[in-house]
Image 1 (tube, rainbow, N blue to C red):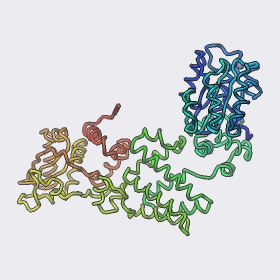
Image 2 (cartoon, protein in one colour):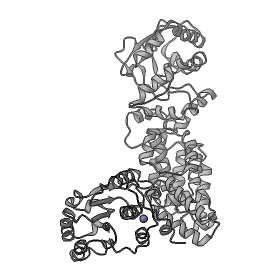
Image 3 (cartoon, protein in one colour):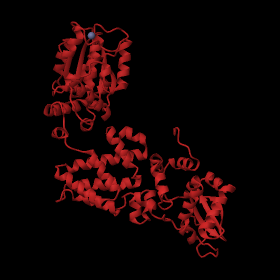
Image 4 (spheres, rainbow, N blue to C red):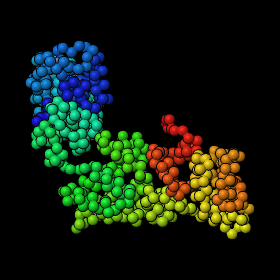
Length: 559
Ligand SMILES: [Zn+2]
């Protein structure tokens, strides 16, 4: 059973998992009879380089293949010989154990001079090609430059930077990619069905994650588990082979953090430690999942590029909890656990650094981030609890972060509270959040517009509000809209107040300029996790976001 890898080795292009970009090119070359004399396959180990090489070899030599086909028949004598590794015309060489120039001269150059015995092509597959010595490469170079028509070279390497450029430039190069968790699970599923083995998908997913994108490792792990467990595999049997890293528990832990339930965080850590969990691995998984959430929040496309694949079941769970975290909070959490991870080694109670981190984050007393950007500077004026516990901000009355005078000292209508109007600036700010809530009851989109404005002064009951963007100001200048705002102002402040909108391009709006938490606001935010994510990406998307919030609709193509 340990030879699942060999048994289920792909025998044609269709069976090769992933690497579609390479398959398509190679199949076309084979169909049109335009194969190269030398190929260079680069990429991590266990992603199918030598497998692909053997499929090519078989295909170009197959006796029954029709010209328009790109797959071998796997039935003719030649195919069978090659599959069984019996063909004398296919020379596989491990450069790691044959690094010297003599080897290249004897096994490659001398052999290449002799025509193939039965096959159409004599093929040299050189694995770990980067291990060849310089003189060996030089000898090889000569024959690659002018090979006999019946010779093909396929060089495979995990470290292409060690291959001389003179060799690389004479080969057709293909870069193999790591295989995704879902693709590996698909293949493992195929194997267990064929073998009549019962095994939970979650176990297959953890095998796939454990393999780090190497199909060969995944198949070998599955083989080891099957060797222990037979036809029905339990989690306990799987645990004997794959180190237990239950990502479900990691996700539970994050969930407790979001709920600020430090007791449950600490209980969970200690329970897992009692069960023999490797704390460092737990933290690695925790940080990886938090990173995945971070990438998704910054830009979902990044996750596909750099993020770890979790398998379907966990992806859904992670998606659910990620709506409870905002980006700034997330950065603090990741940094805090990275710190805890480094502290474990020197701690006489192993789990203490993690417990401290969890307790601090739940209480919101963690230190501010080391290199604060603009956002952090703004937030540093908030009480620590609000600045760090992003999830809580919407439950608090918004804090006006900058003194009015400081924000636009030269503003035409900057007025101090000492002014003689009936309603003064302090009174306006004190109840501004109530204004936002009431506006929302009248006009949903208007409340979004007012969230990105700033009341900057009031004189003789004329309130000046500043907008960063003209289209916001224009909207508020519409008579019907003005009427709504002035009606609400009268209700809230108990006095007739008119408004005057101005544009201030340097205006900065605190991101917590939200009405205090009411059910409607929270539901609104939770119902739109995608928009929530974008909103935190304050840079380039800010304008788009404002537009979307004000006028509705969605981004069809941002490029
Ligand atoms: Zn054949």
